[in-house]
Image 1 (tube, rainbow, N blue to C red):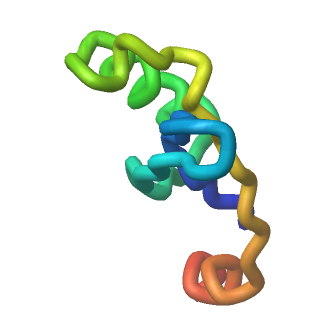
Image 2: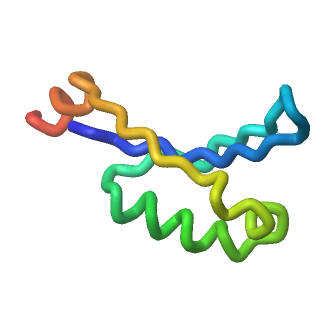
Length: 67
């Protein structure tokens, strides 16, 4: 099973960045819906290119769904 980690990162200067974990979602579509919602929030709306989705493959989640 693949889960999708959504996070937002913006550079504060040449060496440091501010990173925030938004959440983990069961589908890519849900992750994209969340990003669409967050782009309307002050602070995130100024850095809309800072959103990222990281697919996470996990055997643990697969075993749970199989029963």
